[in-house]
Length: 323
Image 1 (cartoon, rainbow, N blue to C red):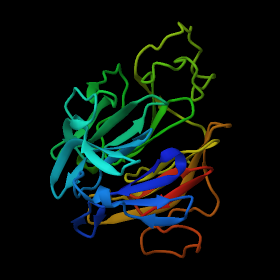
Image 2: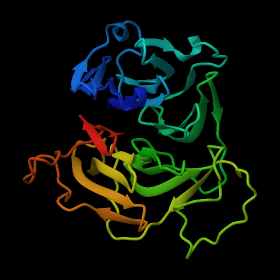
Image 3: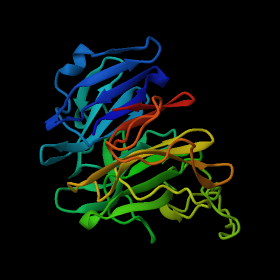
Image 4: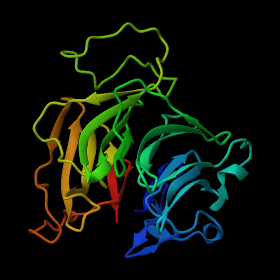
């Protein structure tokens, strides 16, 4: 339930929050990639979001935004900003230039990503303590204003514990999650049109045999979802609490909870590794990454064990897994 986010141009990884047994954590810990050491910024220990888990964390230039999350049974709707040069926390509403509220409808288990190279963040879904959500909002970090996105059909069903990543073409990919009544999802969606600076008609995930090309108007037609049906028989099974990371050629899916669902008492955790091959547009399962249940089967000493709600981020040409 913690977050791990690359900041400062790839020099550092900030790990914030999380859950240890039944205790919620509010620590800010930094991994210096150049020095290969962990350290705790003293200034970050003062104030800040406080103990929480299952939040979202997104870096925009020299700032880290921590959004929503949960402490105990209390969902949060606030947004906090960590300055990664001074290592000081502030509520977003107290940032220079902020004119909006620093809150949104409280939720946990949502996902958020930076919108391309802009100063905006897109947030989707989550759980508000009573119901699963399928709303999407964009935060303008320059002024602290949240904006609700409206979509034509189709769009993803309400869910939490899903994973989202941003491909090179600016599309936001969403996979899996858990919906009402504990239903686990295994669908894959692409969100486009959020970044208005991109050519909205160029889509590497379009299948020319099924989707005819459209006439380009040279402008975005607005945000919209597309459900993707990729070739291959190696699609990951339904799951929640997994990680999704975009590399260069591959988009990686690792781990998560499956089986009876991560909220049941009969939890099954996974350590299988699947990728979307962007050259062939097929699902692939990497060799030696057969799914395992917690406590069962032997593991390679170089293969992480089964887990869910871990954190994984891209560091150069590698994906870094923490927790």
